[in-house]
Image 1: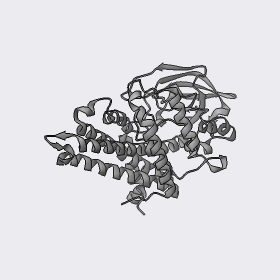
Image 2: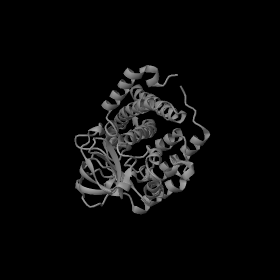
Image 3: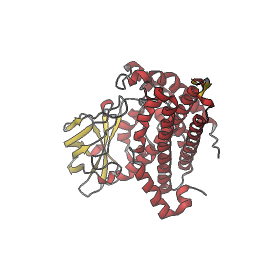
Image 4: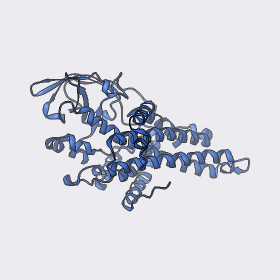
Length: 389
């Protein structure tokens, strides 16, 4: 099966690919050797490109000045940002269509649209020590007192907290239902417990954050009381699909780099690309990429067609599951092809091997994705789950 992308999608893909290859990739090694940091002026330049190009508006309704691009086009854009290591592709603020359904006009004005202009930088405080892949198990509470809520609890892996000014916090109400809230990162009662080091080298930190009687105005509650899980599910669907897209971009970069090396690395008088075992690793990698890309594109196109929401949930899980595991296989093969060079931090394969590993964990582990897919199969059958009409 081949997947023919629309002309507009191809145009976006070329534009973002050119930016990633010319502006972001040259800074990878500098970031790797400096705890993920690049010059502040470069980071501002990258964000400006995304804003000027309209990337921050790609999922914003046209009625609010956005582009409302098809999700297939958005996936093709995000795929290109996956071609770069060290989270340099995380250079823009993303707003998602569910936010415009969940947030009222005042919140859209104060939080959502300013994110598209680089004035608000969001991070998400959802995961907890004992509630990762199952956000329904969170223990953080939000108790209402008149015109505000008191939030108490602890959140783990709050990605990009150090670069954000606003959090989206998920908490449990006295009723047991869930709510999402906007919360300033410097609100009284918010404290960084510690900032663990991770396998990757990113300037985006993932600290543990505690909340002690943090007052959040009712005006900063996202949606109605008890609607938090619905919005969380919408967030997870998109994030899982975009992880799959970034994994496709990473695989493409790894295959290109490993192929170039194999064609120039000479052993015993021959380029190693002429050795069949090297060819087999390259071939398997191309198959992994093609399968992941088709699955991801089709899941995005199913959203654009308006397929059943529950089926889309399973399709996003399938895309994330396959693409994240395929990307790790491709990275591992690339390290092997590069040999000793592939184990050096200055090598793109070594960096991707460390970075891609987490894609099988965050936004729902591979095991959770398998459960989602299996439950859909048992409840709805094969055709409804796989999307074969």
